[in-house]
Length: 542
Image (cartoon, rainbow, N blue to C red; front, side, top):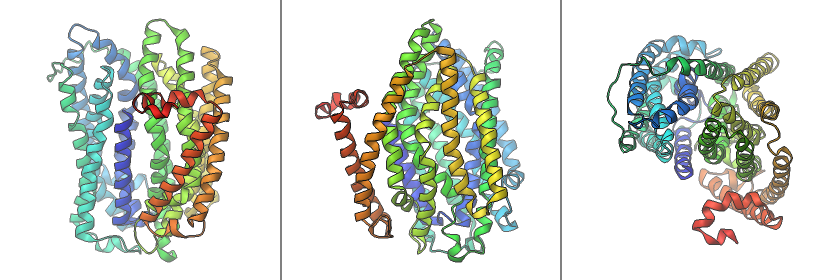
């Protein structure tokens, strides 16, 4: 699982970096395409993501214990998914224009027209997200986790190929904001069509591992008796939670979209003004350690939580939660410090190759710095709400999500009223960090209230000790980065290649210092974290 996620994320980084080379990052065209390409993901999560990813796993686990290993139930579920997602996708694609209009702020008519065209090509992704999600959860419920994590690799490879073809045919972004005047249909097909093709391939890639489960799957429209009423009660709260969170994301992205028209009259094409592309890129970077470590471990522990509740072993919940929180602290806390130290060079990676690339990299780096502050709390909250979901309590996560979403939108709206459009992305990035902290705190109090002490002092002590070691390694890394010109537009900023070298050198120094310090204090958490690797590489155990 971890290796699949890591490879997928690395390829995703390459895709994002190539896209910046093709159309720029802090640019009008970059933000227009980003808007159209992100809408399908958010709409899918808004309408069905929570049901697929959380509610159906316990139902599929129960069904897998039947004499047919869940073949009948799974056939009905897959059939229902294809029908509902197919109809929904067609309807939403027909509404491409109104969607773009509703989710943007102060866009000009040419920007609206370009955004609508991109959306027509991108919105069919919703259907393929649904197919990928239901196939993936069927595999997960049978303990086959790897394929679900490896399928996005195929998606990224397809998109890298199409963006690379775009660069070969049309060249790289060279600066300015005149792309709207010269854009062609072929360019639209390569970028937006390639993005949708990648999601389709990602879904199709799960056909083969699904067949290997030995299930007998065929179209089955006998949906009565599936337990949809029970699932519906659970899904009502989960869907509400996803709706609240994703509506908040859509509203915040609408606020940030005002940066695109604000750039039109700025010098250097407004390259130093971060917008939606820059904000999403900063989140793409910071979510990497969360996806590799927290999400992977939480996916496995979620099944353990579910089994413990079904078998009336509530006493096992607290140790499982503490183990997950402490084990993920090792990579997550280090990653947070590394992102803060390396924000500039990391931003430069995704800023393209134009004459304004250093300014675009700095714009992404500023958001990365603000977003990284709340990363450990994001993972803590993620683990904690999985306990509620495993108990089939979807109401509590809904309440937490509602509080956080309302607060986040209120703060973002206040920022829109008080700040110029050029500063909104920075404000939203900071708000994301703040709300991650608050969501973890709220989840903690609710967990303690319901299940008692899960080893809070031990967990807090672990994060404090590890945080101190990570901070020391961060100081060492900052010194090395200063020597590489990372704070004065020097070597680390001059090209994508130099940024990669700088990140590699500084990251290696930080990692060596970090592991040495954790060894010095005899960190048990480090041993747990390196356990799987230590069984393959004995030197890591010494």
